[in-house]
Image (tube, rainbow, N blue to C red; front, side, top):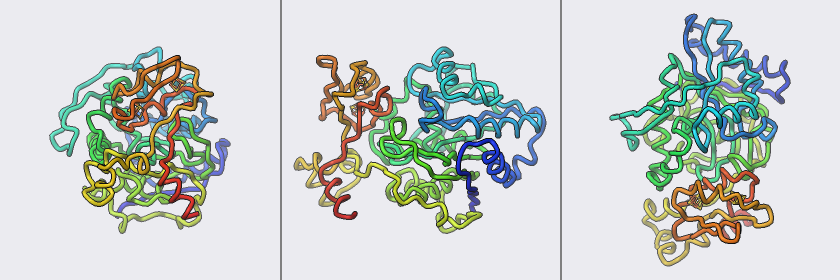
Amino acid sequence: MGKVYIYKCVNYEEKNVNKAMKELLSSFSVLKKIKPGTKVVIKANLVSAMSPEKSATVHPELLKYLTKFLQDKGCIVTIGDSPGGIYTKAHLSHVYNITKMDETGALLNEDFSVKKAVFNDAQVLKTFDYTGYLDNADMIINFCKLKSHAMMKMSCAVKNLFGTIPGTTKPEYHYRFPNHVDFANMLIDLNEYFKPVINIVDAIVGMDGNGPTMGNPKQIGCVLASENPYELDYICAKIIGLKEDDVETIKQSIIRKLCNPDKIDLNDNLDKYLIKDFEVKKGRNSIAFRENDKGLISKIIAFGGNKIFTNKPHCISKKCIGCAKCANICPAHAIKMENKKPHIDRSKCIKCYCCQEFCPVGAMRVKTSLLVTFLNKKHK
Ligand code: SF4
Ligand code: SF4
């Protein structure tokens, strides 16, 4: 039976964080047995150089508690991640500084080597490059943030391990796995390869709306953890009002028998934690429809129905500062700068939403399709 633990924590005040984290960590026998000298790497979600108040990254107060907890047991603790952009010491120092990782008391990763993996048991990701510092770990802890995500609907434990792929090569993966199902399986393969011993979620204040970087901080009020990232994500999806069919990584993990919803054993009543008004952009990815759906909808789309069925990236001109980051990051080369504004070639766009994720001012948004807008209104 898969155990998932959840504890209330209403804000990031030290006393509240300490209480919740103490309860959470005491649930894991693997941490009780940990030996002095163990090298622990915490793969935290540090998606971008953004202050903790923006709620895009794991809050330093939680990492501070975890670091001290492990150091008191004699562990050597390192925090690391590979956000989008160049994977260099200079860039990461900036990210660590803005996200306040230097307040956690942990070592901050300074090994920017890239290693090659061959993973024969993978479903789709048989070979890949990854951030080499993970090899220095006797034990990996996955520490994520609960957020909405334009492409995958939810960013939580399973999605967080995409940060094991070196920054500038990440957009290529959207091209290598343009289909939602394969992209989800690629993320699952990463989790199966690195196998973090524990997965922890910062869901005290998450992010809804235009996540994973430009959404709104959203009070959720809890921390969660599990040895099983898929069952942890399943519970987190329920908290924010998503069903297993909404989140492809959850759907695929159930198919692969890595998640068994009927056997999840939660330590508390989930009803106390459910959020009624968490905003996630609903709508389907056109590629997923084209490749996986053989029904009527696919046929309609084949006749040009994409516009009404699928969401798409859209630039809000008034906000755009013409930095061209979206054009540079776009893996499909679908964006050209014209008169200092991005112009998107819809026929090339693969709807990976990298442009939205990396726009520094939130000018690139996910535009909800006409049909989805209509259906959402109808169901309100
Ligand atoms: S335009 Fe945006 S969503 Fe479309 S392929 Fe490029 S980065 Fe991805
Ligand atoms: S990244 Fe954002 S601000 Fe920069 S050009 Fe693109 S839309 Fe405009």
